[in-house]
Every structure is written in structure tokens, then in C-alpha cells.
Length: 331
Image (tube, rainbow, N blue to C red; front, side, top):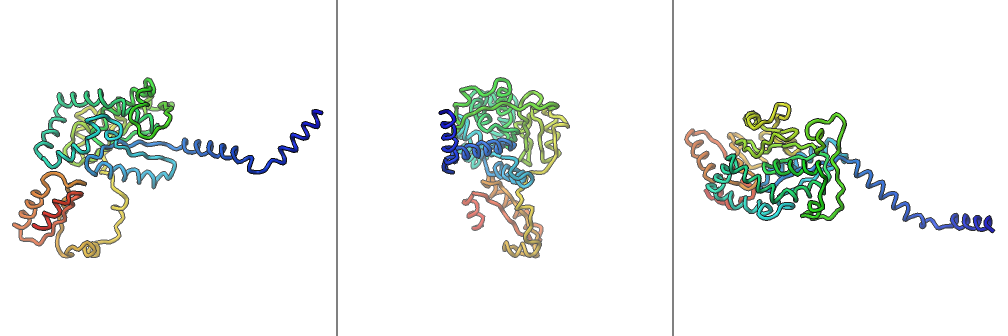
């Protein structure tokens, strides 16, 4: 009886239609895809969309990583303050746009945030109100490397990484603002022989400075693993804030690949852009939003060049400042 039953069962299995294996094959394929995805290294780039330069630099860096490493590295660019911080920090972009048209207010804010006592109070407020949201951002993305490309993305993210390395993601951090609901199981990776943040169990943290001008102190944190700076003046400023030679790398700014590929050269490029081929050209750039007193600067430059009596043409990048563009066209 049992042998008959066994024989019957085997016949039934053999006669099973091919589509009966479909759920199993689908599950195995899903597991394989998840494992393949998980083998990818993950890089989290933190920015704030205050102006267009930070995201443009982040996209340039992400593009370079993609060209060099293909699909083996997954890069996420996140406006951490807008998407993960509470009020008023999640209104930073609109606040920036308000201040950029008011140079006096902008200058006051810049100097105040650079002054040590007020900078300490500012960082303390950020830590108190926004640290849990930034912890949630990091826990959600499970990065192997965090890159900051904004001056406000050093202090609190480093503190969030340190707390995650110490006690893992708390229920409150996982439950706070992430907009895409996923289950978070994150633990910092420790490697034998690791140094810096990795040796302490923290995910490595790198700053890539995207400003060419004055070195604002918020860019420079001695707790980072590496800090890429664009000028020797930044190197000096970084050392004055406690960073060492081992932490500093002097490079230019990240540039999109399209800018490195010259499709036209010399006179052909000038003709294509509607420029005079026989005149010297002065380029004036005011950032993605055409900030500051760009109009006054352009007029002053034009007046100074006019005094020299030499034929010169001005090219002004107004960004998204359509009003300034129209004013300059009418000048």
C-alpha cells in the first residue's frame, strides 16, 4: 500500500504542469536579485538645495562614480534638511531664496553663523531638533560611505553616525520623517585594519567643499575622515580648525563630464554662441540663482573695461534670475 502510494505520489509530481514551479522560481530569482543589490556599495551624498551648485556638484561626482564603477556602486543624493528635518530647518531652501535677494541680511547671517558663540548655539539647535531625522535618513539608506557637499551637513550628520554606531537605529529614528517606508536593519560595518571613523565602528564620512570663496567654518570639521578642498586658502583654514594633513586633499571642484568634452573649439565655439571671434571675453557667474548684487557687479566690470578702450564682450550667467537677465538685456 505504501509503495503504491509512493509510486502514485511520484507520478503526480512528475506530471505536475511546468507552471507549478513558477512561484518557487520567482522566489529564488527575487532572493538572487536582493543579494545582488546588497552586494553593491552604497554612497549617500548629503546636500541642501540652497542654490543650484550643491546638487550640480553632487550630480557631477555621482556621474563620475558611475562612469568609473558602473553599477557596482549605488549613489543617493539627498536634501537631508528638506526631507528629514523638522520646521524651521525643512524651510531652508525658501529661507535662502528670501535672503539671497537681501544682501545685508545674507551677510549678517553669514557672519553670525561663522562667529564661534553663535555657531555653537546654531549647531546645538540643529542637534536638538534635527538629529533624529538625520539618523533616520542614514539608517534608511544604509550607506557604506557618507559624503557631505554642503556646509550644514557636517556637524549633525557626524553626531548621528556616531550615535548609530553606538546603539543602532532607535525606533524613534526609524519612525520619523523618511518618506519611503522600508524596514530598516542597519549596522555599521567594521573591517579589520580600518582606521578613523571605521575603526570606531562608524561609517566613513567625507566632506567635499563646493565653495571657492571664503572658507566658512561650518565646512571644516575635525571629525571627518577626509576633506576635499578647492584651494590653498581652504587648506590653511582647515588646519586652523584642527584638521590634519592626513585628512586634507587639495583638488578642484567636481565638474560635470559634459563640461570636460569640448565639442567646438575657438572661433567655432564663439560663432555657435553668437560671440565676436576677435574680442576678449569676460565671464561673470552668479551661481544657479544669480545671487548677490550681480547686476551692480556686471555694470562695474563693464565700466572698468570700457575705460581701457579695448574691445571686450561680457558673458553673464544669470542662472534662474530671469529678472536680472531682462535688466541686463535692456542695459
